[in-house]
Image 1 (cartoon, rainbow, N blue to C red):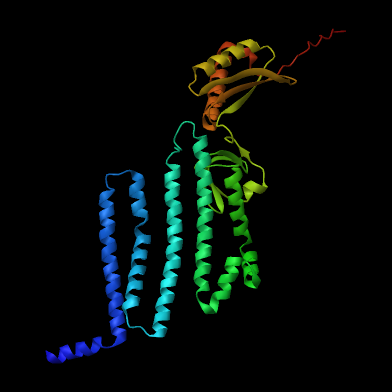
Image 2 (cartoon, rainbow, N blue to C red; image 1 turned 180 degrees about the vertical axis):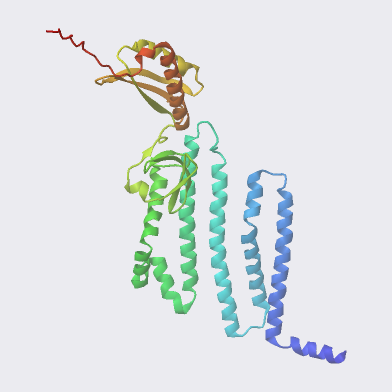
Length: 360
């Protein structure tokens, strides 16, 4: 027994063993303290608002890293380290603090986003203002996250002497390495700046109805580099952010979601236009899709055999406008077929009587 106690005493006389034991004990104690504090905070906010619960849950990992870094600082001040070992520990702590700063910055942005967006509801009937703010904040959040990652990576690289110049080039975008990286990342940087421009000018927003490349759909997601458009038949059209800066497209909900739908019908000249106008007004008034703003019937053109009648009806959004146009077509053609069947388009032909030949 005395032999083992003596071996153990000799073991703890070694500075490296004492240092390892102090660091291990400090890390273990830090994990225990952080877990106890986190459980206490979780219990305290269990009956609070969703925002407080979200803040506590999102700060778990950064707080854990902060406690471990603090524990390493305390252990390094007590451990009998050599000059080289102290430099290694100090370097490790510096890297931890840089990572912690970046992590805290991203967490702060996420928490601010939650607090800011809780005032806006995308599922509201009139969600134009909500879509504007949600689009702006999400684009800026992704741009900020990219910048934070770039700064943290370059900062960490600058702490290592062999690769310090690459960190400086990445951070300052200067030198040959920065130029090569800039040229290689030109599409990414192009979309990154396009995202900033989109967030400021907002030609598109989340849930906007767009007509792009002959496809109609709604903006489902806007990332830092691309936009996902959910097509009406549930397909997804993915476009780079720069597309919406450089090329024309149709935004059906830019200022308001209301739209005027157009229905064109070709009828014979014998149709009484006033009867068609009254029937269209009756169909629109009975439809829950009509927003009670625009209904109009006009003869816009004459053809050789028929006349062209254009019907305009308005609805609160693009989907309802499309359904209302279909409803007007179906009910109007049924009415014309039953009431004025002779007015449906037809081809006229006049057959002249051939005189009979008299026998000689």
